[in-house]
Image 1 (tube, helix red, strand yellow):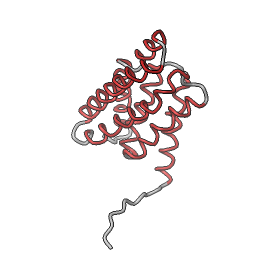
Image 2: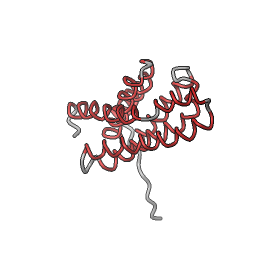
Image 3: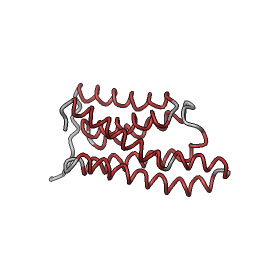
Image 4: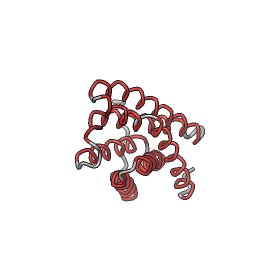
Length: 168
């Protein structure tokens, strides 16, 4: 029987790394500022890709957004966007994960642009369908250029962290 099974190696270091990165990403919304929270979460996701792999980084990207909404840190008006934010994080993680071996900056810029484009496109549709126009415009701005800026800023933070850990 020839089956390809990926083995999952669980080490104490890996678990500690996962819990630490998850804790940082989960605590980031406490700052209540997109330009602080966004870079922290994005940096955490990118560091997780480098240290733990894409699967764990995607999992880390799932949890903070959901927790932030559940405990009231994410404005309820953004609730319809939560699945799209999660997918946007996964787009960043997967793109960066595949391209970073070739070139860190290519992975970062490509992943950031794709995440931004996805969130901008989906938010325009979802928000216009679900929210009144006054509220929709402010939410649409949150899902537009700030997504690109915070992803790129997070990438610069992650670069510094990974250089410090000598993982580049």
